[in-house]
Image 1 (cartoon, rainbow, N blue to C red):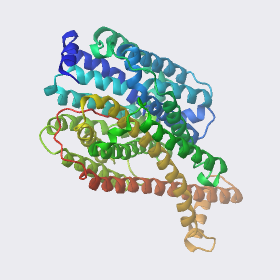
Image 2 (cartoon, rainbow, N blue to C red):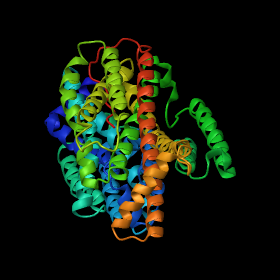
Image 3 (tube, rainbow, N blue to C red):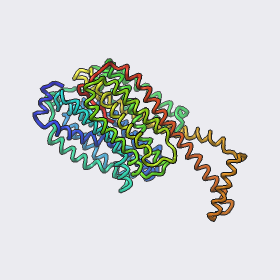
Image 4 (spheres, helix red, strand yellow):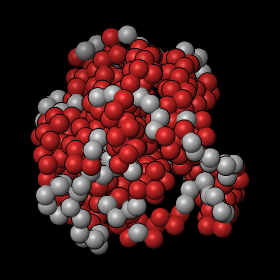
Length: 523
């Protein structure tokens, strides 16, 4: 941004007060992407839905969030950035109340979609305000502090969500946004002002056709991801039709945006190699991070029998890793080649994923402590250097558009990641069960020995011989299902590690960059 505009912001308020104001809104929005993760089984039970259907609570939020992201720049120019930011917070806060008050799956999904739409603009608006509020020499530190908030938020989400769910009810995972939203509105009204270029802007008409096409292909993508596993993917006719609509609307969107004089998003920004590769990497890493945030709490609850609170506490140390990483990364991004920081971050996350792949049903609550801390540290080593490197070669006037696209790719990656890890767990559970059941035959000496031992134990407990036999078979069947599910989770974690290591060569395709303050993409 132009230096006079930055001076304008600094003359009005202390930049750190502005930073606190916009971080409140961003922290609330990022927190909500993961706070419901540990509450999913409770939401499913309360609203008479399956666990697979309950994951729509996460993905419906992400897709609505992604649709609004590219349009946020136009809305801020049209209505004023401060006014638009406050409006988004109001929408987000009100829809949070509606999520908490929902009495059916349909109502909470609609409310979550509205909430995602309200939250879509919060992060890019906050980033642009923060960048303009600090002088160039302090933007690296400002972005590191900002990134600390948006990296820690999705880590604290499961812990806070678990505590609220166990202590009160899952509905308080959404009600908690109300006081934060009110305080954020107060702070923004008090300390944030629009710079002259916003007040004098004439953005023209919005590219409504482009926005409509974007909504169609993103909506189709999300529906396919959510329902694909349930309906056997391309085995279902309606999924094939939805895929055709997705491809048609996506190609039409690309043609529209390249040909329109004032497109919704300027896709020509992808001519910058670092930005294009940065978007690929943030999309992949978004899938990995959201996949991990979804998988770990479900593993602890499904297979270990933990409550939401205990599961939340078990995954919370990831925040320690992120907190440790951010001050270090904030300094190093301005001094060394960021590609080495990125490679180190992906390698750490991959090592942590391999560590998760060693899980078994005998682990304790803190058995994965160091793996979880390492994954948090690795996340911190990826986010700030990646955003700095991706934005490093962009002119100031392209940063707002680029930030929207960058965050859009991260959200799309997150949606795909959630769907893929859930599909792998479901499919591989069936595969492993079939493989293990081949070894369990009525003629097997070991099986007969175990069966008789269980039957005798149950008979001593007072069961009749026939009842004890049926219960013995049920116990063996339950153990078989449990072990199959465990190996499906192990497969998921190991695949994530392979993807992490596969990203390292892509990192070194980036041009060398030493950060001078960039645009962070936190979650």
